[in-house]
Length: 223
Ligand SMILES: *[C@@H]1O[C@H](CO)[C@@H](O)[C@H](O)[C@H]1NC(C)=O
Ligand SMILES: *[C@@H]1O[C@H](CO)[C@@H](O)[C@H](O)[C@H]1NC(C)=O
Image (cartoon, rainbow, N blue to C red):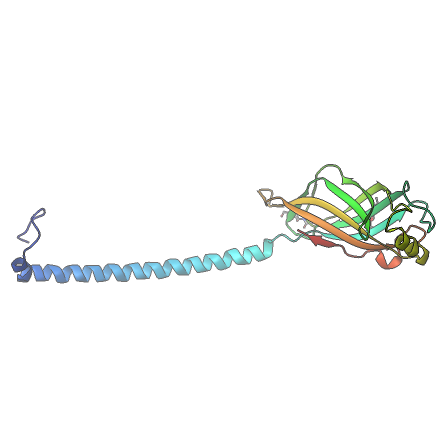
């Protein structure tokens, strides 16, 4: 080593000298080693990342939140239905069971609004739960509501088909619940709030009670 630090760049003549050739070979060897080391580290890191991804995926499969399940338990229009007069003014009571199927995840619900339709005609609407509530893991609760029946009136376009359905003893109604939910994992993590619509198709008879084939029927959920 006859050239100290800070000396100018070697000239062409100096580059050809035996000592500078040795230095070049040494540098090339060192660069080669560094490349090999970097490649090994890279492979190792990629391998670790892959393993971590698989572990996260497996944990997610076990912990991933399932949406609650809803079934219609009962629905009745007090006093029954009459094919010759509007049900407006009667009260409609419903009971929907709400199952949280998650083993470790609780669900927060916002206030819930309910409405009942006969095809496109509004029959009743109102709050089912005026305030939010929390449903612990693996529990079933009942969502009940008592609504004032608003229609259809005998002058409405939907009246002839409503009257015919009452006469036939099979009135198709659609009960809809609207709320927003958040999942709670391990007392610590909350998911974002997401809107949820629950839609239950049901049949009531002329006596105003749920027909047996509708009891326990599952409701659809849209998030
Ligand atoms: C709602 O229905 C469920 C299941 O049939 C029943 O256990 C519960 O007592 C009912 N709730 C009310 C308030 O009627
Ligand atoms: C609910 O979750 C907690 C915490 O993960 C757990 O200890 C408990 O056993 C769960 N309850 C049920 C009924 O699965």
